[in-house]
Amino acid sequence: MTRSLTATWTGGQSAAVTIGGLRLNIGDDAVLEDGSPAPLPTEVLLASVASCFAIAMAFVAGKRGLELPGLAVDVTADYDGPRVSTLDITVRSSADPQLVERLLEPARRLCWVTNTLRTPPQITVRRG
Image (cartoon, rainbow, N blue to C red; front, side):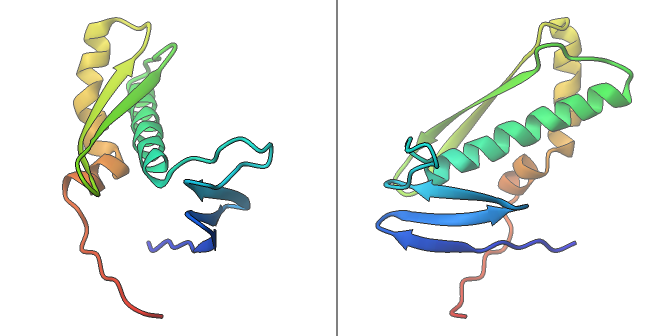
């Protein structure tokens, strides 16, 4: 399976991408349709980690016939120069803490985004 998308520079420190019909403005001086500040690229990265891990947790719980009420995933990043140096993922739910703990490893194995970051893909940059 191959997926691709295109970011188009919109001026200054901003770009826009269209994902499934949703146009998302991203960057330091980008704004959303309501005029509020748009997310930074690194915030989109954190959103990808948090949402993917939340989906993975819900999936592994559902496969076991379990529910995770109030499921939320917090992601905190430390920045070191032009990169994120550490990510801290915290899973919260009102379910029994031991149940949540048992689901962390299966979710970790399933989450595509954290698996990608754990073993980075080969990156090729070229002129089009």
